[in-house]
Image 1 (cartoon, rainbow, N blue to C red):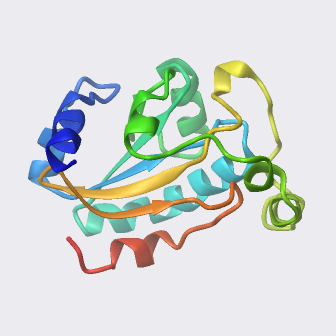
Image 2: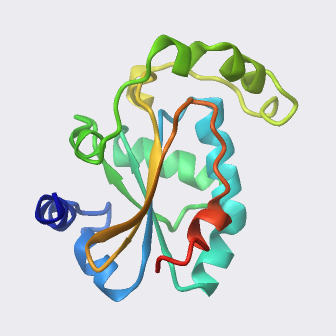
Length: 176
């Protein structure tokens, strides 16, 4: 599994043509796999991560996103959330999602009661739901991985589409 991961990580290239494995050999990388850009929880995560981005830089951690849209669409959304200089990886075929163990959500993961409640809560009311194929697969589940020297040190795979992980606690897990 570890060799497969290292080979896969070596294969992954950012929108600027940088190799993910090379990044992880210089500093830890927080690799965030997004749902689709129209998802209110994805937008909430982008907002949260934009607020934490200076902390990541202070800890010398690189933030890189994986998404299913074109780079042009992604650039627009990243700019909207003040993440215009963030590097990202387009994966419209969801190959990397699959290889990292991220699957399509079940009905209850995507549309269950807890997800509905959070989707209509005051925390997410500022984000508008958008459904369009060019934004990504709305059934795809997200996740995040802390990677150093080509090895996954920590992972968080969402159980519900509405999960809101504590990103700083995740980074402070002591595994980097």
